Length: 304
Image (tube, rainbow, N blue to C red; front, side, top):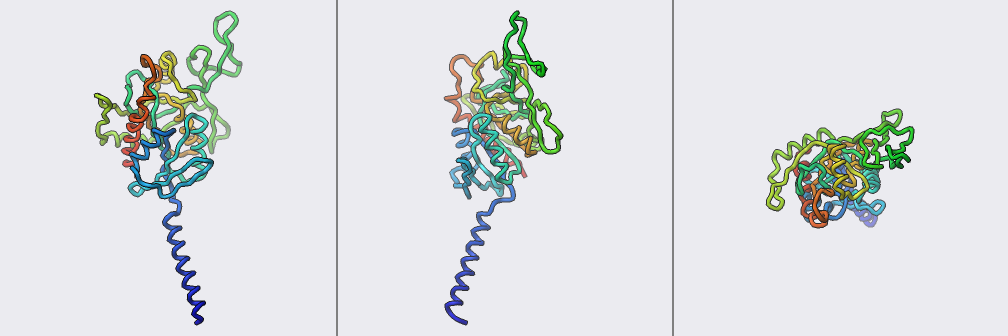
């Protein structure tokens, strides 16, 4: 056989083998567990709790958002930011679901405590997520007897002055038309995993106290940094809310629409206006983010 031809054939075979090996090493997994935080302190805490200082297997950058693929105990994780507030959170959650095969969506971050029984440092994992800023803002009646509401609107909740909260209209596959959706649920199996995790979780210390971690109840979200005592009291009365934040209901709604299991873990960085003086979030956001991340790791350890 001609020697140059043989050498070229062997070289082609070696290159093909090498490229095949690379493709196998860096090929996209069958599915990812999506892990989100909204912004810096949450993202740092989640990454530290899950993968330490390890580098990602691969990073995909789409629309300026970095999606980092990590491996943890045989699981493939996709860590990325939701961004702050409702539109960013909905946009980036849907972007991830469109571009990657995702089996579950998990979020860990901070929130304001609404239930007066909760304290800074506690961690809550709500079963249901409501919008608190989906609303009609109404003019008062000239005679002062109430508010002028549009004829189509039948208030489903107690108002806060001129603010009349409403359910959101939503649709997903299998529905003939949109429905008024009062809340968007966390996944039952993921809630069960959280309950198993809590039974094994070591105490989380905050200052001189042990942080409480609980599963259940309601959370609310809207595009508002809420720091008002009266609104806090009203929100707890209307929704029996454990916490309030700026992303969770948007994420839960996107997951509901795509029929993807979701679980959201929130550690309480502040009291959403229930405190005396300045809101504590500027001072607590870094350490309290670690509380949610610790619980996140425990939940992931309970997944198949």
